[in-house]
Image (cartoon, rainbow, N blue to C red; front, side, top):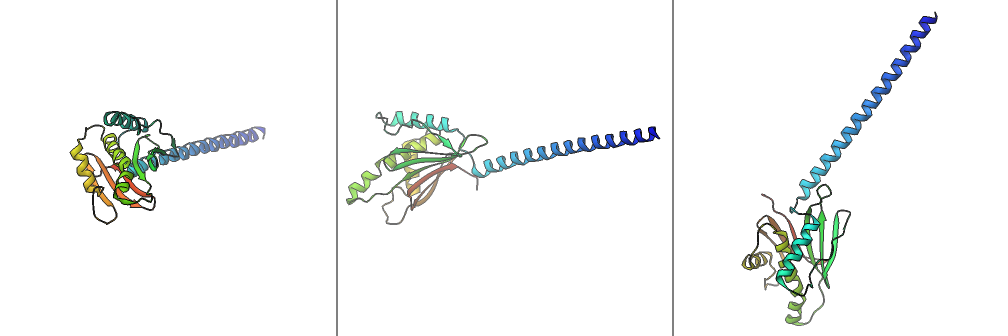
Length: 203
């Protein structure tokens, strides 16, 4: 009788241990699945956002090297790019903002935009002066995002024309153009003129 009770107790303990082990294995499996799902989500996000092929630090270096070649004053030099919630934002000059989106998984820049806020001006000369810094920053944006291939001024001028930045028509700016592996868009919005650089797709 005692032996039978002992066997029953041992069986119960064995079953409890097996159940516990099974629970641990199940927990491990679920943890593994969650980890795989997170990796897949990150990969999908990277694919969706694209990548310009450089980190924020590399972009800052590219920009400042191009700036040093273009002008000596250092007016458009980037001192730092602080990333918060996968985004960065800094003032290039008065009324001109540089902002971007960064892939969390790779720390690579997915999108960079120049945003020029419109101001009330009188006359064509004032209007042109308002966009002097925008054109200068646009040249830097193109040079910094085409880090592997040095771009020439005629190429940038052609791109400006494609984007409608040198268009004398009264129509709102809304253009697209590509240079090497970078796609550019320029559009007038409620925020002002927004010029954006993203990874060129094959579509």
